[in-house]
Length: 416
Image (cartoon, rainbow, N blue to C red; front, top):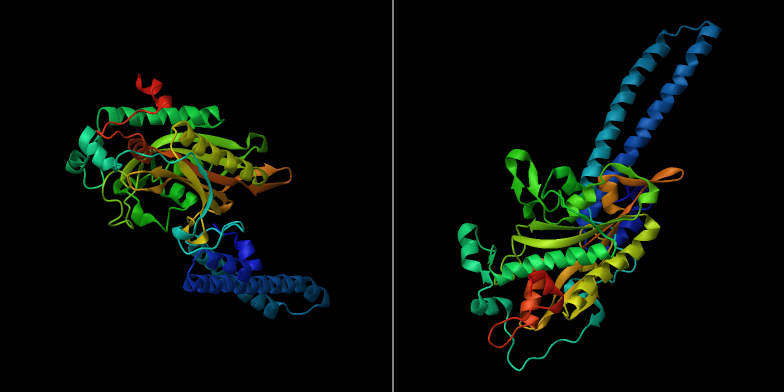
């Protein structure tokens, strides 16, 4: 959540940064209105409270001077009611501002380039040469039509569209990738965690999925629980409403979960294959750090994801997201995009973000900095999306007959 004290101190400066992230003028005007209402409510309450204190002190003076206190008492009693009314008005104004602020995205870091959409993201570097083929490379769903790794029809039969079934070598490859990614990240200092895949609304508010993105979530109505859209939600909220000992930071975690998304805003996109599914598997990195640690940890997380792709010998590139493509909670983000020969383009396979204090402020994650409690920084990133890694292997390691070579680092995991 936004730092409301900063908002009150420098509304114009905060608004200018939010406009870079394409926040609407209407929302900013509403924010300004509620901010002014809270300011005025505070002033009115403080004035009434000061009057109450001043009048209360007069009782002693009146008694010493032998004056009648009846009229003064009536004024004090009436003002006491006014103080309570203004206190309640201030509380309502604060809640109204807080509620609106929960729908306002994070302020972009000054390093984030301005841009309208993904077409204006900035490439940082390319890693590994893209492969050449003596034949026209196929897309992964075409390869599956030949080798039978993915059963799309039966996925639809037992669920609905955008669900699929991995079979035989495809299923074994998925399991191998999950274990390889977990082992790789654990060797880099990330503690392996296994977390619930259903969470309560508070957890989703803490990381920013609620209230703005409720339409994209699957909900279990009777229990008021949601299927997680990413392991970022339970991993980050393990420390919600806690004060972490400074000596324990940074906390670096890795977890594998299934993820569930309605993909409400993606109608017509990636309808073939497993690029965009309602259920998919992901190995996620989450870190909780002191502010002065987060940039170094961020770079570690980017390196981990990139080095996994390099170990799999998958060509990819690093891209810095522009303001128009930056996620709701992110202060800055680097995407990893893997080369897909069948599509003849790079596609996102990992998104690594530093949210700074944004999520910690919502989830109340703090540490004690000698004298006072300070909000931590939180970071998250895919390492990697398993289904998209399978797609990348199928397309980069394909043979003309539809067979697919298994990357060397995965062969021990598959008993090959």
